[in-house]
Image (tube, rainbow, N blue to C red; front, top):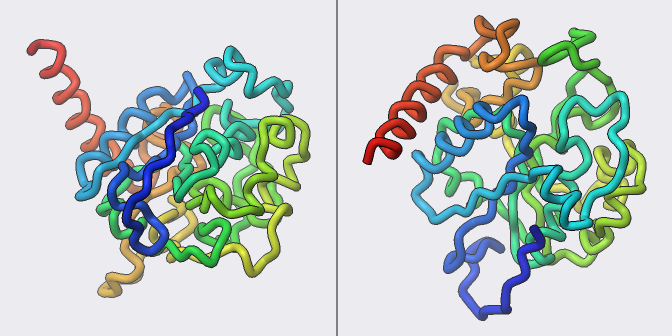
Length: 256
């Protein structure tokens, strides 16, 4: 699953290569296959730029010899640590994005790509967040730690020298604190993105008549409508509508 491409000279805009599809790596967990498909659909449907969506599948990474760490008791998904292979999988070139599969995009990904600034090693929404729940999704333990949710959607400057530390060896052996808190970086190397791009369902709030608070990407971090226990969570209707649209299109493709 290592994407090795020949180098091509091309034009960049705000650090993003406009001649190549923008690479988006999405965390994949077999229990959340539908969430992945709906997230993918929501990005593709609204994107005005070419994108390449690549699932980070742990079983594939293991077969390729890129991932071998044992699953810890606090890992609620299969991509808890494999997400940090993003710069490696992008061949340490250009900018790429990682996002959890429990997102629903409501805006054009070009708007997000246009926020890219080459002076940063990574960019993310810098939440100040302490979850109230002790469990999430299908009973997984809800852990609390500094920079909680920062790593759930990250724009990686894959060519930044600091990100070369994220080798398979480091991703497989380093602590959760080192990786999820971005301890290989200085604070000033972490750029900030408006919270509406990682709008935490149940935590962030829409302010009436203030369009700057309307979500551009909803993150169902506690659990989404694809789990029975979260069928009635906030913004469930938006996700279910997107799911129905995805199902109709998928059915149509099978029939063609």
